[in-house]
Length: 353
Ligand code: XIL
Image 1: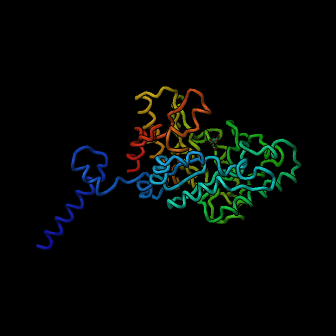
Image 2: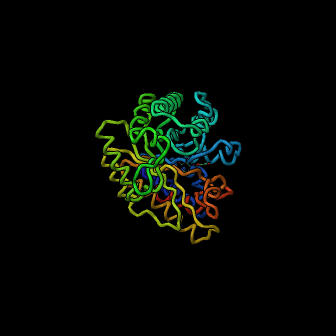
Image 3: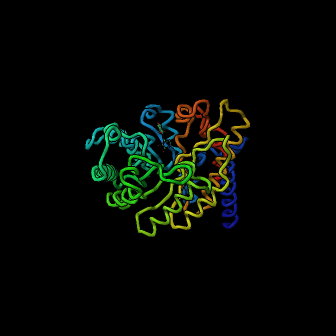
């Protein structure tokens, strides 16, 4: 008698689970199931695999409450799109401003989300005081060290990781001739990692770049550098693959192999700034292809043990950086401009589920 009840309960539980798993499936039963068991979020699905699912965000958007509703609910990792960059955090030499970065960190913490901090050393979006004069190596080393130590200390204990150096290589795998490289030589990367580690020993320290999703000259340069840094016991934890993809340039088919080779070096990897842009107008065919790419990227990360998670470079086309930077292109994110989920969103769910 009692075991029959237990069996019935177990069957009811299994049925409920099926209904929840069915998620968006049509029909009154599925809908009733959904009312009692809200659809799991991307973060919730990713957590089942020990991964995170994140989004970038930016301060001007934070007054949009429909936007922040989804941002606070669907993701468990947040990246400030601009607020932690050098121009924002040290607008005058030695004068630090944490307003923008703190706003994003505080919002994330209020939603129990972690933060991928971005970025300490980059050739772009630097303050004028830094780029408008020349520096001796000793001067620039002191400026860089002070910037890194002060910013990393400010966020110590509040961030999961730092993109310590961003976009250090050219497409052919040679070092990008930035202010830092030209003045300090390639050793600036190891120095930056060491200074960041001293300032927050618990933050995971990443090198981050675009066009390193596939195996090729640029990702090979990261592989060689990572090997070298590991051999020298420089504190490097991971490689961030930005994954700003474009339909017209083809899918990076060697992504999974590439993630795996970094993993074998004992490094974490992450897809850090994912978007998949297309030539406008968006059509059903392009959106379907885009969905496949999001699905494949998600599957690739799940297939490699040390791929820690995925971050989209904002989640809605309403606030994507693409139209401003790539005229004629857009529709790159999993939610459209009205904050409605696109095929890409459902494809990510399927891959995670
Ligand atoms: C972009 C921001 O999204 C824009 O708002 C800003 O105007 C320019 O920078 N690679 C990076 C990011 O590492 O910091 C860039 O973010 C996008 C490309």
